[in-house]
Figure 1 (cartoon, rainbow, N blue to C red):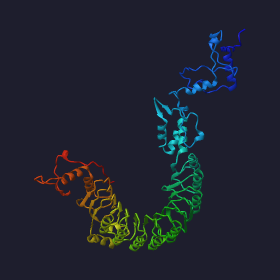
Figure 2: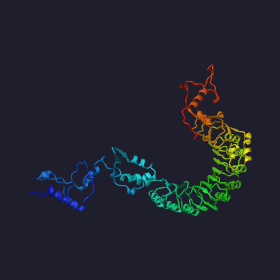
Figure 3: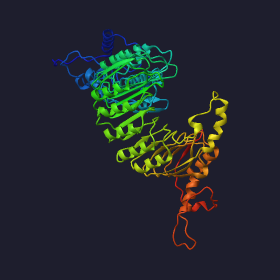
Figure 4: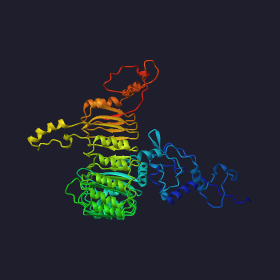
Length: 592
């Protein structure tokens, strides 16, 4: 008697096993992939054998040598072996866009699948788009376009979902008819959001502020810009509650703060605070020990009753780390400057007190005595004179890099020249509307009487135009906008790249010399056409080549080189341009 042999598996028994397997697992409807290797069925011939049954867990595979009917014998392979071969099968390039795998964000470990190391290519038409390229393309789309891209296919929807999850900065433009719930649903898509910027075409109220507080728990920076026709109805109590609840908030910038009334801000993390359009604040309390920068822009209304002196006293007690202060108000006076000097903010580096007509040279003395390390000083709209500019030069010769004295009618061209000569580190200077004629300071109006109209032409006879000569090695930006009393201008600034000559109507083209090889932008809006042509001629490549040719001209005997200054009155000869050394640079002249 032969020993016990395993019974060979026949096709009929294999069919019965398949039927039992389908009855057990149920029919998979809508599956267009192969049940053996997982590839699409269309145009595919599977090389793997069909799954076989195992009657006994300890039985071995049957080979043709073990059976007398070897032609009917079938090799039995365990199901686990089939799955192992399925993993070793290389990924096909015919993968559909609806089933491609998306690389999850690094912080979402719980949502990663087992196919993380698979090929990240997607077929689009006849070419392949790598997943990294798709990520870079979609992340540059604005939020509305990203929402539309998510409707293309499942793959794009998954990538868009991951983009929303990984987004740390979001800029939204809220239209007039947009509901607050829609904004909240968009914000909830970004759990990692830390910087938010809203441009409001609709009104801003406490509901929107509460929606932001709920949807963005880790918010660090909030910026709200109001468009024309929209209003900000947030009150001081609501703003103080929002700042107190957001423990991670470091920056807040808000426009249209007309309805604050009064506020109390308490936070240990807030470092930057910008509030604009303030009006008649009855109470301001800043309990911000880590505040580094503050900007308060008040409305241009004369009936503003805000007590700026008390505010300065409070800043000195509760905000000892202040470095940048910007205040724009018509209520700025010498007493406010004295309160600021008494605050003793030792780390102050930038000071901007704008539109204070009662700030005089005495205020400059108080500032220079208490704060000797200023890097920026903005006293635009004040009543300082050339003497005040001299005090500034004596107080900050080694630290001041930016000086802004626009809208100061008591400053002349002599004071500007002295300031540029005594401040070697100066990089930016704004002297707009300082050198002005009487018509610019007091424009004619229809309400003037006939006697005033008769006297105004005679006043031009006593007008003397001023000349300005500036030679500076580090100056990069110079603004002379509205200097209608300026007649001559000579600039020798090798690092100057931006020049503003808007509304310089009296500037003579024959008395304009620009020796600025790095000049990139010249603003000449409102100037004469002849002046614009003169500027274009001096900053163009042809003028550079002509100037280089004249500066390198030799004597008649060829002994040595001499430098001949360039002048517009000089008739230029058409030399061979191929021998010139042209310095290529681009300068844009804005005339409209």
